[in-house]
Length: 115
Length: 111
Image (tube, rainbow over all chains, first blue to last red; front, side, top):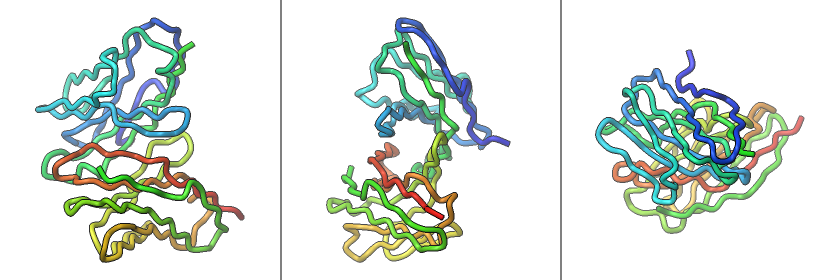
């Protein structure tokens, strides 16, 4: 069974569109994350979220918003897509408070291409 | 968060032991050292974590000297499938779950 899954794997869309990427984890973890890996392969955290707290990286534009329907899911919504949003987006999870937050389990990534 | 410095790339051959060193001169007292591995077109994978001295698991060993200003990830007898990017991260995981990935070290294992 896949621990952290993301859909879609590839997403090609035009500037100005709104899109969503879905993430699901079946590990029973309490905390989930979204990361962005750009063309230079730098991996940057965008959000961390558990049922109590959303922590937003201050550099993330407010066009990006995480939505969590339940503990096992953290979807990423992106409004008014821009060319610079093209990247690979990774979802990850960790056990949560009291456990090691640096031991995270990553999904396979979603390659977003904005044309 | 402590800044980390790693070699950009390394080459090795199958069967050799590979040591990747990470410098973190301004590591704080509560900081832990964590290493991740990322294969092409996959998400990063947690390898090992330590605070001081030596940690070993089924995948790798992590050596941390007494001053903790550097750490060395040791991969025994690498194979072609160990070709990946290896990231060193340093942070206070009990007060900050914000992991900061650097550029990593691209390890290429040759036959």
